[in-house]
Image 1 (spheres, rainbow, N blue to C red):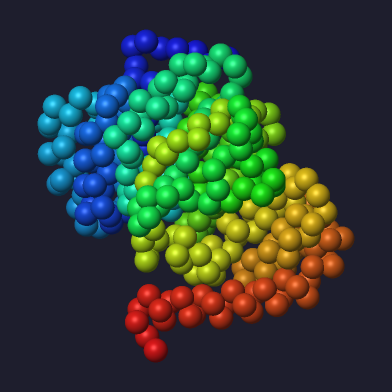
Image 2: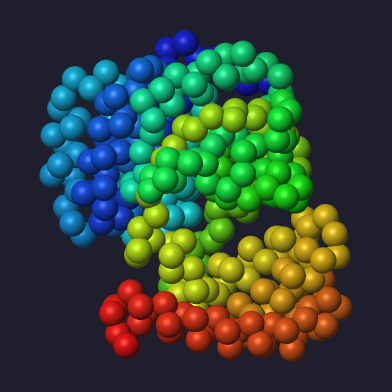
Length: 309
């Protein structure tokens, strides 16, 4: 059961930041427009080089109606910014709003109302909708017309598209932190969400609480280069998927990706380290083909971003 601390705001909105002070201004403006100020805005600066604190310190000085917290850390990638956020959040709930995204004016009010009505029902938090900035339409599909779901349950039953996850802080702190691999800066955020899914469901809020603006140089756009640059992180995530997948098809798909990432990482012990050794051996030719595809698409992605023909 979630506990209430009446001396603190209900929710921390945390924003990992890396060289996006221009788009962060829009995020800040959306925080200022919130119809409920029952939140803290925490900015995790992941080693930005564009001096964002010069701007942020001016925002902190203003009477915004909400507290702004600023934490600077060495650059380590999105998942390490989440680790730092979870270490420092003290409110009952938390939600991540990326530095190129923003919240509708009533987002905090919608979350607050939903949680006040469902706080003591054993949910891990709330799952709500993201809208696309370009169309103002829901990303993917609406959530099912029922009270609750797990995140993976939604996707395994035909759901797709980004969704906004508002978690209880006590539960998110109970899950292990994202692992950190030398010279890599990516681990799938879904790692912690899968662990929570095994024990809890999320209350469904079929309303928009975040508007997403995908950037050309964002992690979603450059996923193939992420595969190349962070193979140990991806291999870790694929092993976790093998452990928690609900059917053989999902396990086999995870094995193929695990082989691909392990080959890119030049890990000679990947079969021994696999939780599904037999399936991993069967996946070898498919994983090798996937590795070749990833390398090719990564090069094409780089050339497209850099304008190289």
